[in-house]
Every structure is written in C-alpha cells, then in structure tokens.
Image (cartoon, rainbow, N blue to C red; front, side, top):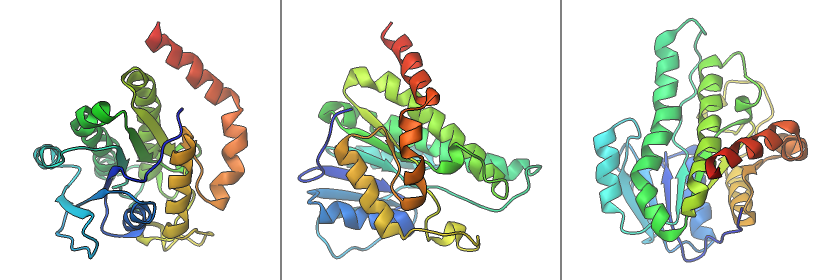
Length: 239
C-alpha cells in the first residue's frame, strides 16, 4: 500500500466532538491538513478556520448523504464514530445498536463519500480495535461489531484497490476515553493514539497498531497466516 501524506489534504473525521475523534482533528491540523471536516451529531465550534463542522449522525442515511453533498473534495475519511456499551450477550437490542453504529455506520459513510475518494485516489481509515482479533467478553456486542467492521475493512480494501482507494484498519488497544474509563486496564491517551494512526497512514500500513499494547501484536499479525490468507483471498477480486 502506498505511503501518503496529510499535508495539504482534505480530511473528514466522524465522531469528532470528543475523545479520539477530537484528537484526530487536532493531529490532522498539526500535520498541515488544508481542510478538516469535523463530523458530529451536535453543533461544533472550532477556533481554527481550516475546520468545517458537519452535522453527521452516521446512523442517519439522509444526513450522511447531505453531508457528502457539502464536501467539495476529500482525500481521507476517518471512520471514527463508534459506541461501546456494557451489555449482556443475550441483549439483542444492544447488539443491534452496536452493529448499527460500528458496522453499518462505517459502511454507509464510506459508500457516501467513495465518489470523492475515488476522484482523489484517497484513503479510508476505519477505527477498529484489537477486540476484532480477540473478543473482550465484558463488551461482547462491541467486540462482535468491531470484528464485523474489520471484515468490512478487509473486503473494502480488496474491492477498492482497483479504484486507487486505500483502506486502513486501526487495531487500537484500550484508549483513555469515556468508552472504557470504567475498565481497570492500562490505557493510552487519545492524543498518542491519534499520532500513531497518522504515522501508520503516512507509512501506508494496512493494519495500524497505534499504541504500546497493540504494537506488541503488529509483527505477528503482518507475518502470520491470517494476513497471508487475506492477501490470497483478495486475489480473487482481480481474477
């Protein structure tokens, strides 16, 4: 996958109002992005004139389409909006809620902005989780939805390669945000994770392991049989 630079590019971040989303907006600005579209469900005000707020609830197809019509050009789409709620595995409503946001929200936003990304030969960056590789049983609905989002990312990567659009999956460990604040585990600051994500994008990494916990898995994933099988399956698209 090709290395890409953020400087002078147009970037869209969903879930930009807090946590990792807000950190991604600030990191994009720090790296010289010419325009950062900040997608949020509620109105957002930002001091930097390069930031354009977008009302964007990823679960509302009409709102997603209206947002896409307001963006003139786009180089990078960061699908960051997500939900992680404690729930029992028997709670179907909770599972459906997680899939609506974490899977179908990512899919819907990508579909809406794909024409713009195809035009620029841009990139999609899906914030997934190491929970996609090994479930966190106390967050079962979240883990299931992130595993689905990772599979979506792999499929998109193979399908969109011929259109010049790269797809990156962020395999983050626990981030110090509201989502997992109550879990007694080591966490990395959203600012540090945002830096790691952009570094991975600029290096052209397909899977980005942006924090110390996830980085311990990076080499074994990239050289392991699962990644080799992904590449083998991707060849079916070209065939």
